Image (cartoon, rainbow over all chains, first blue to last red; front, side, top):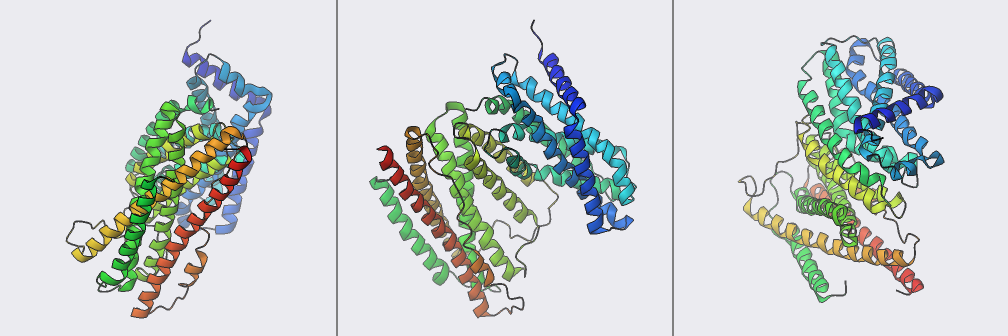
Length: 226
Length: 288
C-alpha cells in the first residue's frame, strides 16, 4: 500500500494528537506554566487598563513563547522512547511528512493553549481591543506558525545534542527575535488601535514562508545526521 | 601553519597593526567635539568589517559542507564563526565605550545596535550547539543552523521596528568623512581584516589537527568557549557618572576602548595557544 504525503502527514498528526489526548502531559503543563506566567506578570507589574494595553502584547507572547518551548521539547522527546525516532529514520515514508505532521500537531496544540489562555489575559489585565479584533486572529495564526515551524525544527536538532531540553531555547530564541518583535508590535498596535498592523503582518508572512521552506529543505538532513 | 606564507602574513599583519594603531593615535586629526574618544572608531569599524567577512565565509563553508561533506569545509565554518564572534565581540564592546562618551549611555535599543546584538547572539548559539552536540552529528546540525542564522540577517535588517537610529551612518567615500581620517580608517581596516584572516587560519589548522586526533581518538578533543570575560575592568573605568567633556577624559575613553579591544584579541589568542598545547599533547598520546 502506497500512501501519499498528505495521508502520511494526517496519520502523523492524528497519532500525535491521540497520544496527547490520552496522556495530556504537554497540554496540562503548558497551560499551568502559562497561567503561572500570567499571574507572576500581573503581580510584578500591576498595570492599569491603559498601561496593560501597551504591555499585554509583550506579556502574551512571552508567556506563549516559553510554554511553546516546553511543548516542542516534549513532542520529540516522546519519540526517543522505544527508539521510535530510529524507526522513522529507517521507514520509507518521506521525512517531510513526519516534519509537517509534527508542525501541524504542535500548531493545533499551541492554538488550543492560546484559545484557553486568551480569556484569562482579558480577565487579569482588563483588556479590550481598540483596533479591529479580527486582525488579532491573523497575527496569532501567523505568529504561532512562525514559532512552531522553527521550534519543531530546532527541537529535532536539540534532541540530538547532549543537553537536549536545555538546548532548544538557546537555538530557537535568537532566530525568533525578529518574528517575536513583530508579533508583539502587531498585537500592541491592534490592542491600542493606534496604527495599522499590516506591515507587521506582511513581515510575519514573509518570515513564515522563508523559514517553512528552509525547514522543509533541511529537515531530512538533520533527522539523519550521524 | 608552518608554511612560509603563514609567517609572511604574520609579519605583514603585525607591521600593519602597528602602523594602523600609530596612525590612529598620532596621525589622524582629532575630531572637533569628541577628540580622542573618537579614535575608538579606527578599531570599531574594521572589527565589524572583518567579522562580517568571516560570517559570510561561515555561511558558504556550511553550504559547501552540506553538499560535499568535506571535513575542510567544516573546519573552515567553525573557525570563521568562532573568530567572527570574537571580532564581533570587539565591536560590541568598543561601541558602548564610545557611546558612553558620545551619547552619555552605554547602550540604546536602536536599529544598528539591536541588529548587531542579534547577529552576535545567533553565532554564539551556533558555537553553543557545536560544543554540546554529540560527536558524529555536530557538523551537520551546525551547518544547518548556520544557514538559518545567515538567513536571519536580512530578515533582522528588514525588520523596521527599530527604524530610529543614533548610530552614525556608513561614511566611507562620502564627504562626511575627513579624507585624512578615511585614510587612517582604511589602513586599519586592511590591518584588522588581515589579522582576522590570520587568526582564522591558525584556528583552522587547530581544527584540522583536532579532526585528525578525533579520527584516531574518538573522544572529543576540545570544546569551543569564548574568551570574552576579561572586559569587566575596562568597563569599570567608565562607571563614573559625572563626566566632563575634557580632553583628559576623552583620552581615558580612547585608552579604555583600546585596552578592551586588545584584551579580547589577546585573550582569544591565549585561549587558542592553550588549545594548541592541549592538541599537541593529545597528538603525541595517539601518535600523530
